[in-house]
Image 1 (cartoon, rainbow, N blue to C red):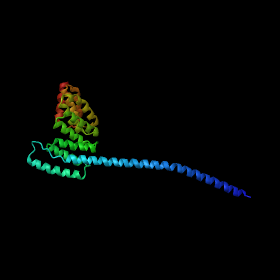
Image 2: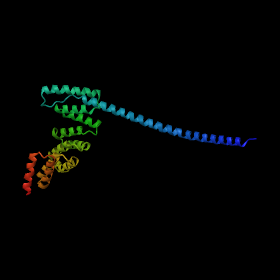
Image 3: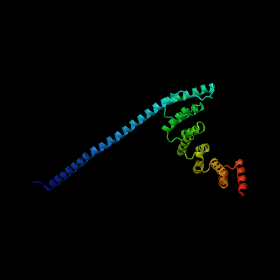
Image 4: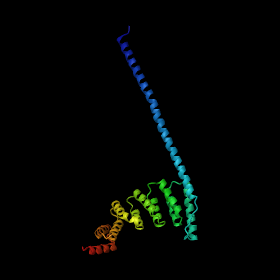
Length: 256
């Protein structure tokens, strides 16, 4: 005859066995899902690595193509300068062969090619920086300068400077040069005021932008606004005697 203790022990064993079976069943149901998630993560990581390798190979091929181009010297470059530029450009190209993913050497290459009169080569170098460093300010600023003041391609200059401004709104240089570009062609003149207002908003203490806006209003015959921005600029640059003279002339003209 089974005692009460024996019956209790058996009942406990049955409960434990049942609980163990349920735990095993639950784990056996979860393991394939966990394995599937792990496999998915592994596949995603592998795909990402493969894409990165393919992208690097494509950039390397493009870099090799760019640095394989001979230097197209400008017609006014002296023989002595040709030799000097050739030596320096070849040194830079050798650095790029070892490591294409370094934006400073590409910027150097672009600047030396520009100095040598090889504007197309400079554009290729600066554009390459834009590909590997799309957030760069300098490469787009340099492109804007090259397009605007050397090639007189004003739409491309505008496009490049606007990219530079987007990447670095607090740098006043691109606003200044783009304003000069806008003065160079008729369709650009209507864009000067909004550009300078945007530049001043991003650079509230910059005197040059305020002077440029004051000069714009002065050309347009809006002496009140011209005086306003000249005076604001003078607060940031109180030693500017020429600006002080312009302020006094405007005050006399307005009758203040």
